[in-house]
Image (cartoon, rainbow, N blue to C red; front, side, top):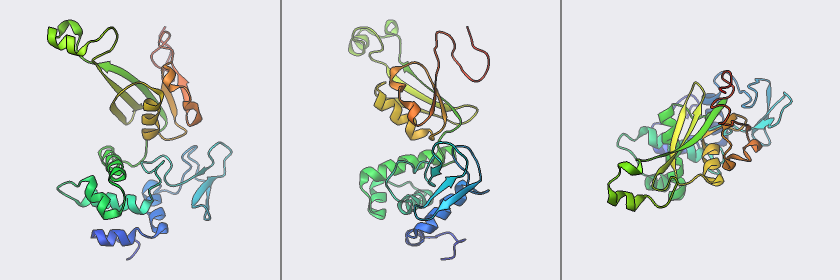
Length: 243
């Protein structure tokens, strides 16, 4: 098949994306139409390391080497681009929707992996990009639910136990300043829960703003982590402090 043509059937898509070089070039052209750029500093002065199939930025900074997956929905996934791109083709070309079971059977992955891929691909289609949030990213969480005094007695007794946010749901917000946002209901505010969500939606190297909740400790391994003390301000990096 000609490199500039697009597969018209699933069989053609499977054959077309079976070549690792085709997959790499296909995603690179989509992501960097003006030339490969370092996801950390944005420099175009990079070189391709063919033996490892990654690029290396010539500027001096951490994370000089990067793959085409870094900062995208494909990152942190052991699944090859051949299967990712075939799954994207299936979802984009099925007018009536498609299940994770069908994707699993068609591309040869487990149903659990297919569900994971389906979730990420649908999210990318909603936002219009395969890239994660980047730049300045704000993260926070809140409790939502009716006030106990407004609940019927039976509902209150069923939902409210003791003091605090019992009976309410936790909503986590991840927002790219002046850009995209992601909201999710999370089961708790534990370190694993919150940081997993951040790493799922935010590209490494981004500046992440959070409050002083202990669950966010350790983000500085992958991000420039800025902590905001809400006793002093509710925003940082966008104007004078609110005191």
